[in-house]
Length: 244
Image (cartoon, rainbow, N blue to C red):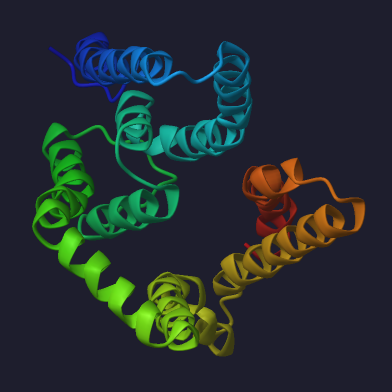
């Protein structure tokens, strides 16, 4: 049997997993609605909550679709569909896949034809992020209690501490944006592509935030990420043609 990243068997396996996740979501949704009715929440409030939640899930869904498209050339559709639909993020999945492919001298612009390479990429993308599933139930409550204690003693310090952790996480990803900039001095300008796209996306994100404040449109806050993501991907095309 010839291997393909889009083989029907892979689609079937991924479809089964996603179907289980959807079934769990439907189950807990029904349980939540029954509980809400039992405690006397008005049906109008329930309908409004469900409708608004459904509408605002469109924003992250756009980001997921964009991520699947970005990764589908090399990894096919099933694997990115699975990783970005269940547990995962575009930033993590892209970096994990790139590092795994780099070990074989490949990149995300090349289609995987070797099943061993494909399995390796799958393990790298899933094994690393699976640690969160194991560590969260063990340490999450302790960390949350610790954050509450900090907030009770000094709310300002708690905000500083939270922002510092967030910036630390973001800094880890920024390394991949700027890691090849020094190659410019060797005559290779391709390292500037992610930098230009990064700043362009950041400017678009900032503009969305400004418009949301000025126009008082809260919905724009939810759609700022997919807007900047898709715009960044679009900008990457002419930038790559220019610097690549």
